[in-house]
Image (cartoon, rainbow, N blue to C red; front, top):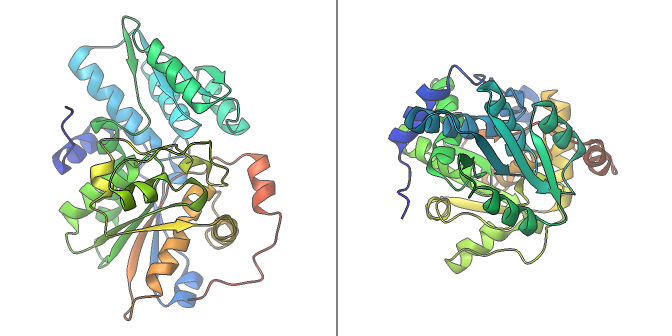
Length: 332
């Protein structure tokens, strides 16, 4: 059985990758804070080198593997986009051949970026077919499979985003950390970092109502797999199930929210407007969870929100802006 990562692994990951990834900034909106009566600090992983936090986990995995076993002949990975780009970039930096297995529904902009980073992109009709293909490819000699979230090195690498954020916001008394939840890697790593550095702060996950496998898993106490590919604007959180390594961490969370598609579109429009950043719906939806939580608080709170990525297709943008929500300012 694989041992679950610890905060020590997150610290080691940070030292391993800090020269290979961008130290992303903390941003905020004074107008949003005034409207809400609380302070929201955004960790802008959308400004990461490949446009998402996924580069942290992929870089940690590859560099740790190379340190232990040397450079592999081939790297394979299965992903709907951001993990694909991260693995492609990190592998390319080290001159390693990368094959990415994905679905035909992959975002065009993410597919193009994956190929631009030098990877060979293999597309399949469904996620299970792509996952089966990558399992077969991983059995080839000299091939290393980098999973999108269910691995200790991936979880530890993703946790460096919140480790970094906490060190950047040390002048603030942070009450809670919010992350979007797909497979659970970012949320798990964030839990490790927060519990160690801010033991009194809460850690809360948010996922789309249309892809609520994590929420169902938490309610029934065992991992639930969605029967069909979910239809959600938050494509980065459209994983069919969480992992056996991430699920125990999700069970330790202090809260978990489901968000509907209207809320996702609403907050994507408003964060684009307020922060002047190109941000994915997957992380914008997290604000709906923040609002639900803040509405129950009786004193001013300070929260960290991880803006996990900024890779959005034209099709997604059209769907997001099909209705104008900017005439309805966010209020508690």
